[in-house]
Image (cartoon, rainbow, N blue to C red; front, side, top):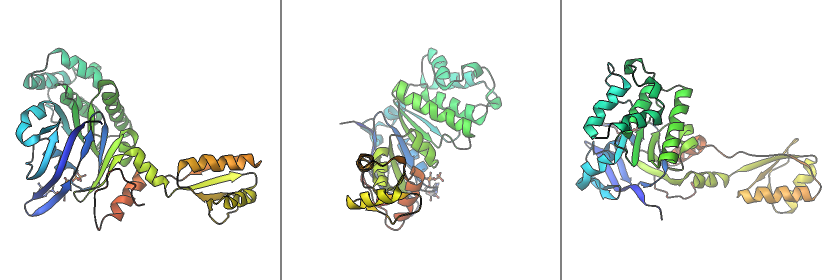
Length: 318
Ligand SMILES: Nc1ncnc2c1ncn2[C@@H]1O[C@H](COP(=O)(O)OP(=O)(O)OP(=O)(O)O)[C@@H](O)[C@H]1O
């Protein structure tokens, strides 16, 4: 079984008498790119601040690297890199000098600066003052700073906030590379659902401080597939409709230029295609309306707005 690099057990948190986290149970497997998704005000930043020891753990338990945060804060933080929204940079200094100042603090070897510059693609711009950097370059330098101590875990809070599409792509590719080539576990919070969808393997969806879904992206899609409608077009749609109905497929009333079938699982797509072909029909199109993560996310957060509950790798009721 995969080890979890982050675990929270019954984590609750209040600002004054306003409770913003309710019994949060996070399980972040080592080696994952873990998407931490939620609408504005869901509690993502609060959770991240707790994980980084910036807010106390008043109720529940937080384990990072298998250790209790309350008792091992310094050790845990030395193995954890973070970028919370905008990096704090000395704007009058170069990228290199910003790294050098931070390197001294974390006592990383000098050679590490060239390595992290290379990793984030800033070698050519290292001597430029950071006030000349674009937002995307600043974010990449922020990630380089977080990487100096070579942490196993990187916690990134909305790293693509405010970036243009090419900046977003650069950060996404960097995240994927850090995970694939350097084995970093990445905990990535975002409200940009399309971003999480493109790089995360596991995710948690939270709203109002409670977990609504947690598990693999694949499981989430699979559950979406359960309500999926498949549209198909053949050289004889009337015959296709009859054949599928006769074979107990759940076919919707016939339309003029296509046939719509409700499928429970992707294996049904293969078998109904075979049935049509074996009966001499030519299949021109088979298209599914699998919801993307954005639709799923809205569905889950809206559906559960009244009564949030934790689901672990279970099909969401869509
Ligand atoms: N310092 C604070 N004092 C009081 N309430 C706070 C404080 N910081 C956050 N909150 C409240 O806690 C809740 C969770 O906020 P949080 O910033 O963790 O959400 P988020 O998911 O990160 O949202 P966003 O995507 O908008 O950054 C919100 O209702 C917010 O208003």
